[in-house]
Each structure stands twice: as C-alpha cells, then as structure tokens.
Amino acid sequence: MATTKDQQPQQINIELGEKEAEGIYSNLAIITHSPAEFVIDFTRVVPGVPKARVLSRIITTPQHAKMLLRALKDNIDKFEARFGEIKIEGQPTPQFGFISNPPKDEKVN
Image (cartoon, rainbow, N blue to C red; front, side, top):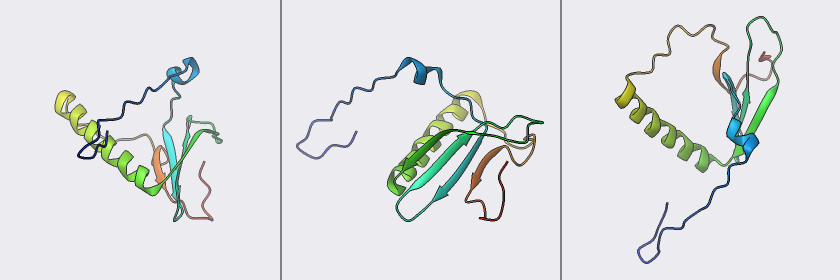
C-alpha cells in the first residue's frame, strides 16, 4: 500500500463473491494494447476443439499492467524459491499460453 510521509496506510476491504471464488481456468491469454490501455482476454483451449470463447476480459492502464507484471514476477520468484523452478519447455503446442499482439490478419484459435 502506498503511503506518503504523514499518511497512514489505507486499508481496503476486498469482497470475494461465491462465483468469483470458484475461479475460471484459462490456458490461453491474448494480450493487446493501445496507448491508453492493455486488454487481456483469458480463454481455455481444449485439444481437438477448433473454437474457443473468451471467458474473461481484463482492461487496465499501462501503469497497472506494469504493476501486475512486477507482482507476478515477485510471486513467481517466491514460488520457485519454495517449490523449485517452473519449467515451460514441452508445452503441448505453441498455441497454448500467452499471445501478445497477434497480427491483424492472423486468426487466433
């Protein structure tokens, strides 16, 4: 939490609804951006099924996207320190995972 010299940390109460607590499994994220925002579309690709639907879309500012990157890196570093390195080679196919700015003429399954 950000604070200035004379401020107390601000407490934020975050409510987690029952549906949101269940979570959504995603094995593919498509990331695009404009000068004002980053868009992350989460989907799930199933082998043998040629179509996938976006399950959740997150739209955020470039600043928050960078803060998310830092927070993910921090958590991955802590995870690997405790459980060992996360290996990513040997993924089923290149289409599973994260795709950044697919070309306009390229269709993403």
